[in-house]
Amino acid sequence: MNPSLNGMPGPTSRVFFSQRLRLHYVDWGNPEAPPLLLVHGGRDHCRNWDWVAQALRKDWHVICPDLRGHGDSQWSPDGNYSMAAYIYDLAQLIHQQNLAPVTIVAHSLGGNICLRYTGIHPDKVRKLVAIEGLGPSPKVIAERGNKPMSERMTEWIDEQRKLSARGPRKYPTIEDAFKRMQEENKHLSAAQARHLTEQGVNQNEDGTYSWKFDNYVRVNQPYDMSYGAIEELWSRITCPTLLVYGKESWAANPEKDGRIKHFKTAEVVEFERAGHWVQHDRLDDFVATTREFIK
Image (cartoon, rainbow, N blue to C red; front, side, top):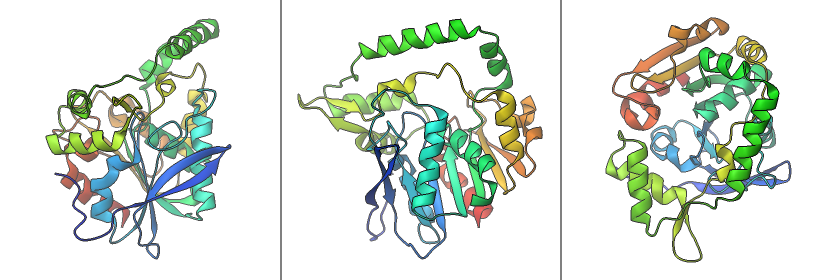
């Protein structure tokens, strides 16, 4: 199930700059078509969208960025990955490439970034599909909020310190990395897992393989926008918004926990037989739903 190019050229690697970082994206061509941004989630990479990009490239100018610290984008020198920085990177890509009003499909962390960006700049987004992108449930947010700042900062310092002593995990062969990918998502076919692995690793000087992402992206920031501020940004979104969920995922459905009330123009769709990576677990159905929604 490797993405078939159907005789068409593959994507072109390009770069842009944000806060002095050299950030990478792939461009699937068709520049005369309306722009479509596909934004990946945490510890992932832009080539996870290859199947979706292939399905939509004839009607859209598809652009898939690597978030800072992910894929082929540069790592943040201080190991700090704040939501504000991610949002700024997205804003820079849209501004520099003159993409607005842009249509966006985003997953997980990417969805979180894009939902906030859309609330900040509602005039710059035409339509938005966010796959499990609202972040932690209200219950988890409340539990975190009850922790004193001293405790949150202490945990963050300890986590940062642990990661400073931990190098990227090394896999003796690419097959070992492939097996780890399969363990991470049981819904993936072998072909899907192999493609995601091949695009998601670098070979080290000693011949081993490591994931491309910076280990420091694993650490939760000790502070963020207040939950009220995030809800206010959601309420500012004016474009049609589709919130996608997998029924077998750990992510909380906003229709069930009440978060949908903060959106003026959103609807929720839940896919059976899908976990957190709906775009992989139910590829054909996800593409059909997305194509109809963003047209």
